[in-house]
Length: 331
Image 1 (spheres, rainbow, N blue to C red):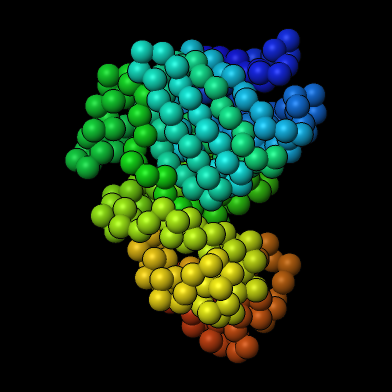
Image 2 (spheres, rainbow, N blue to C red):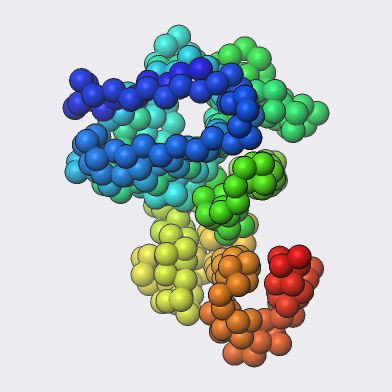
């Protein structure tokens, strides 16, 4: 199993990454490696973690100019793709050509056989998480799921395909899981078990979002309004503490409160303040797991003046109080 990479403006500089069959390195429960990219038209890192059936790759690039990355692989995979920042366009060449574009904070699930193509980085700063699953592992989870039969058919015919007709927005719960995966400090078999569980949970969230997605609602918005809803979501994710009113947010994205409320709920399945609350709760949960802040400090961060109200809200969302959650983490 091998993938070859080179940038169009640096054809003489090529990276080759080889993997054992099924990503399984005999004798080691988990393998990690990081590649520095200082010489490839910019700076950044490409971090990999792999174990049987799973390959996790996180690319963090700061480019000097818009760049095209050529790639060629000799193995098939199902890729859980998360564009955390930046804008990318991928072209897959061959008999069954395919094109797909990702904007910041969107995800999809992609099947590719052994392929050749190119990836256009349209922004100077890009962060992408790709989790590649072996075909048997992916099929184990959705083999009996009727709504995904078309995607399975493409896999069986070895045709490139995307699970969703539209890329879907990354949710606060997904952000929390992605952070858990990238920040995991466990080692050896414990790290493998932890990451395996988090990857499955992240896949569950993706599949659920696609399964219950209302395409008609999604498609009813004008492209300009759709772009404004995603702008509002980006503001929530990057400046959560600055979002205090619908009116101010609507003005910033160039619309009115009614369109913001209606359009945001259609696209993301929740309200502006519902998403904001989820985001802060997921961050509160992460801070609790780190154990460096008190519950009262975390309560204040989450926007609660009274820690008792925070405790009630936390228990309602996660089924456990913040105090008990901290205790369980220490066991």
